[in-house]
Length: 122
Image 1 (cartoon, rainbow, N blue to C red):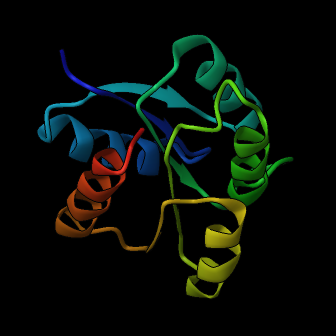
Image 2 (image 1 turned 60 degrees about the vertical axis):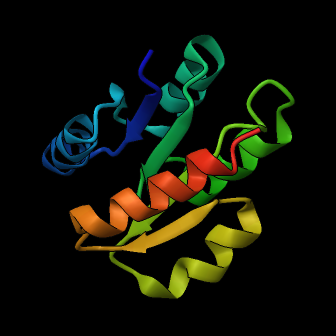
Image 3 (image 1 turned 45 degrees about the vertical axis):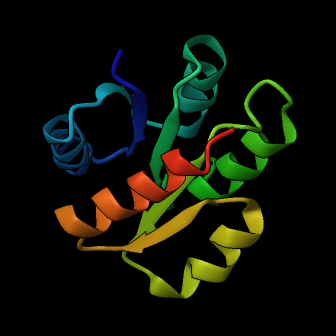
């Protein structure tokens, strides 16, 4: 059975691109437009990995990661964050992200981050 990845991005084009890259890798894909929807999906669907944009309205990806890591039901799910701002790497890692990618995201970098995140999965 294929692993499931939740893609979180309020930009539909970016979300479709990241989802498409993951589909090429053979993963099942769930999508969410925002952090609240993503947090609910993480609880109800239990994805194997979450790949989220940092720049989300209301609750950004770093805040989402903190929220997920504080909840015992979602704390084990690895999170990969991405952003056009490379200065957010430290904040992302401190929040509990497994990896941080700077835009533009290449297929090779995304695959490496996903492989690393799923290998370290509990």
